[in-house]
Image (cartoon, rainbow, N blue to C red; front, side, top):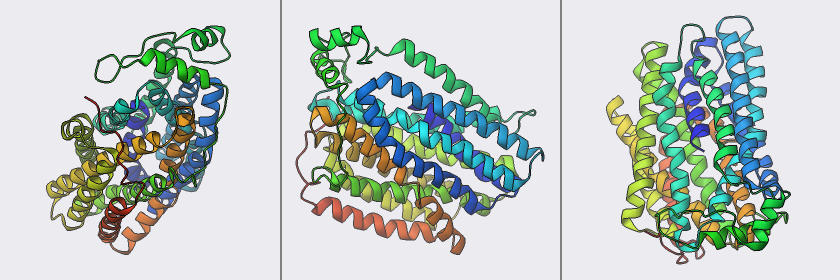
Length: 423
């Protein structure tokens, strides 16, 4: 989860600059992400069902391997475009195809990882567990922009970060194979573990005993039986609506941020890439602070995380629109990211706790599909609004976040008292 987040954020930090260098329109950059997200949305539920049939570990490997192959192909395409070996239009077309591979195969990792964690935690500790899992994204989005400039090397230029993260992904595939238990239901050892007890102890997030052996054994017993879960299921529909709305607003405003910085701050391509990286790192740091410390300290339920997260995100988003300089913009963006840092684990844990244990794979697929759907149209809408007026996406997002806060406070299902965070 960390390496894919780091690689994608590193790509996000350099792609606006690459687009300007190769003369690819800003809107075309948004289209690339939109197509990948559309494929992600449709493929995630399929991979979630496959993780029930084939085991979580195998699907995590498929997802990370798909990410690595996609990133490697993207690197070669961008390198050829930067060196003038292929025309901008050809670069755009080939990069879109390479990125689409991530949308198809990269979607396998997220639902498998979420279901893996949910199946090995009790209800009382699941919010903490999933917040910890979500913090892998936060840490990755810090590391990605932080290390990306070090991979911009003379031979490969701005394509360097993509080559680097492709190599890291291939290493992680091997680490998954060595470090996680084999949960493939077609293997005799797994079947024995499912019928006679958990094959290995799984520690709880807080380090205390939580009956994880029994939980893991129960989860193994469900493997091989694919469970479907409709997004219209009344238990999860409000969570899906909330998650889609919040994620779309984050995608729209986040996609415009790089261009906002380039046009407002000026400077060389390398300077712009570094400033974008600094802003993304600051936002990721705020997210990580929330998910590693503040959530545990305040002992908030998923419904409270969603309510207060929207308010904090709205305040930060409004600050971006009125930021007079880069320093103020970074602070406002960090506050906005802190709000979304509350929202993601609240939406994810609330959805997980709303369904039964055998449905964890299915709900993980639904959550992953919703997260992907947020990037289908929202980036293009954000760029379109930005081209009309740079502050416009942030003004509208502030208004919609305020409406979303009212929705979280008034919807009876979102207001249901769900178990608070453990430890």
